Length: 201
Image (tube, rainbow, N blue to C red; front, side, top):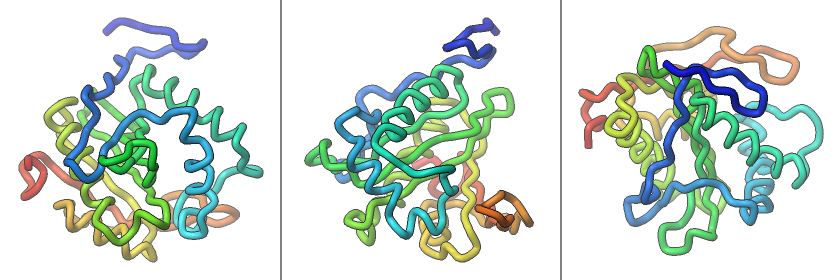
């Protein structure tokens, strides 16, 4: 595998190609983040539910930091470790519903993590399940992955239901899995394989 350098980083992983046309099911569309999305992305990051269940950020979140995140997203994609996408209304792709990603991509072992978040106005309409389904189809058919993992807080019942609706299988509890603020937090682990009931839809 060819060694590449991206902004000073050494990588032997191939960059991840963005699906074109963007992934969509006619209700939600998953596309690259745009500079114009920064205010909506910042609003999502400062939503109380996002702050409760997602990894806390060090320091105050500002539009400048969110703009910097766009560059970080692209750097990770070029390094082949993560693809971050905006979840938007399929009828109006300027209206951001949230964000999603395949992260910790390991092409050697053909696995990755699945992450997502939704803005308050997009919740309760099945957008998260649709998003996870689109990511899974692309991960298996487009990237050739053999395993997806989804983790969430044991208190995040909504995300656990999303995982189950998307066909993921609950595997158990990862004790003291991540640092969260000044404490450590357990995570519920779910997985999806191509042969699982909805993994190939």
